[in-house]
Length: 394
Length: 169
Length: 75
Image 1: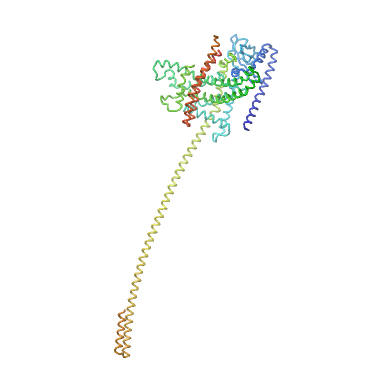
Image 2: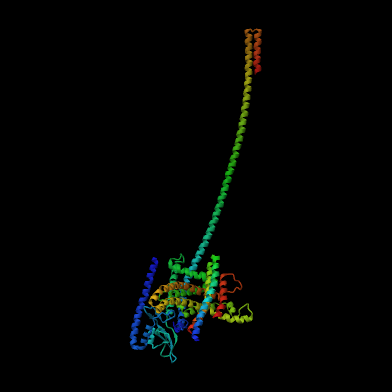
């Protein structure tokens, strides 16, 4: 109980630390905005209007990526915008602005206020001269991906330093920190890498560990207040799945490629059907990885926010008294889903890592044909059996 | 919820892909070099050490067991040896005692025999000396009788007495 | 009928069917797994690991369907 209190205190202190500079940032932003508003005038005023309009809770909007960190009700911290622009005269240029507002005010970008877009912050920007080739702007999910990368790097480099100092190398591991993370590392190694990949586990273990802890941290960051889940972005999961895909193809043995382009033990006309299915299966595997992680992380947040949104829906429909009445039910369910999310965050990180290991193993395994004697081959057959089904549905 | 923003969930964002790719590559590189390398080698080293020490312990245990077995065997042998010695000693003692007893018995017998013979001899010599004495006495008595003039009857009586004493012996 | 309405209808029905299919699939998976664990408690770890993987594969198929439903609604 005492420990929990301490933890709570620590969290409060941390969050206040986080919030204070953010607030200063906003003040600065606001001052700048106001100063520029007078110069440029109507566009910024329009932006203000739209900002004021956007007050209602939108679960999908909350879960999707944005060009600001959302600390509502304190405010929004706009992120730098970086554009690779191709001018009308055919020249390339990189333009950097400290915020979306700055891009609009100083850079002469025009927000395209399409239907349903309430704020300039969500709008697509168009340069006055030429068009954006690639939008390298920092986004919420990118910031949180960086944050989790930093956290993972910090934790494990610290852990590695402990081992280098000899703690845990010659002596038993010491303290909560080392024991906790060591057991996680050992779990990935002994339950995922070694049983699945066998002798080749050494080669792929660093990748599996990195991907597991990166995804886990991303998932968990989404559960803290003001946090965002980087893995609830299809781009992020697609990149991670691509890494698995590339590793799989690089490691592929002759047998693996032969299995795809000229499947053994089948009549020729069956082979002709199987080849496209196998090639599709090649791409559906990482696609399924990406979609699975993305959908799981998005769905959880959607459900939580929808449950919280019920409060406002009921308030709007039946008045504030009913709204208050719904609060305990809503919050109770949201809490339950939140706990479920905690479980799912871990399970999905595990599943992504496990399936990555299995896919890699299917490619790098030396084929012992018809020798289903050990556990990994069981899992391998399971995956192989499931893949054609997936390729048909996609 | 509006369709346009919701579609953002699935919309591609090339810039983000590039950023994340580099981020993850950097993370992979940094972790592989500074974290997983030392951690996995340290863990492997520790495990090796543990298995080694376990093997060592196993070896030491088997050695100790062997030693113990040797000791037990030696002890048993020593015990058996001791037993044997004791048995032998007892047997020797028994033999000695019985021999001693037999010796003593024969000695006693010889001594008895000697004693008997001595007694016999003594008796014989005593008898001889008695006979001599009696003869002396008879001569003396005869002398007396002769000297004192004996009547016929008295003489007869003395001779009869004398003869009875002789026959008694 | 309004095509948008039809799309919404299709998406809703599709989502329902996807949930149904995934539910049946995972149910079929989890029941025997539980029975297996009850019969052989010492194999709990193996069974659980394999079950999670298989569940993830079923879920993957379901999510493909779900994504198509989402695309139906929003595109």
